[in-house]
Image (cartoon, rainbow, N blue to C red; front, side, top):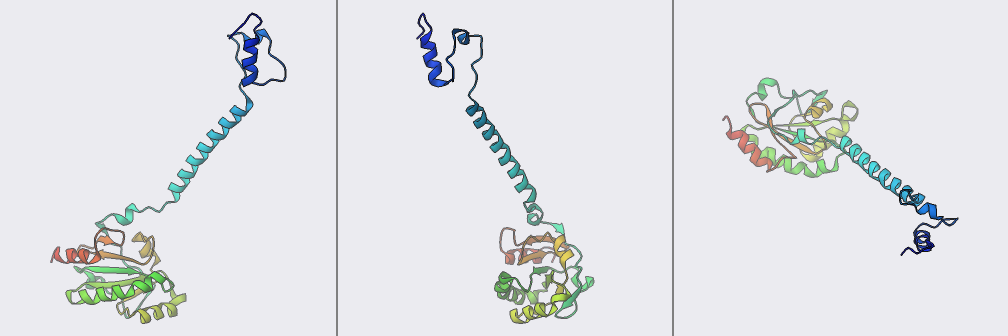
Length: 212
């Protein structure tokens, strides 16, 4: 508490704000501002800089995050299939695909998960072949890796037409990863892909029932 000499004030100030020289009574004028410690100002600057850095990092992460909304939506038109060439015979013509339910399979010869999943796709094609569902395989790899792509198809037992050098078409299908499957209905609309809810069998059955 204050006393006549003012030493009480000086004691409190000296405890919380050590100074090289004792404060005088004029320094205790209520209207005067007590200098803030430099350490506190420095700490506050670090906190503000950290917050700004975190905000910038979040913005950068958001900007490079793949746009998944396009691949998860349903009912968008399927692109025209453009490839460099075909394996397992000629590719289907536009007239052959008209009013047909299609399944498109994206793969690559170097893709381990594609090779592991191939038996399921082969069984799926066999199941729906008699019901007119058309299966088409697409790989972005071009003529430089035809031998490897042929070996992949031979080893996995995939016998339907597969287009190579299909990068443009796969981009238009919003391909974010492989292996990947799409179901296209009779109206040439993509109604299901590997990111969609529900099974591919349910999607195929629904596409077959619609417009049949």
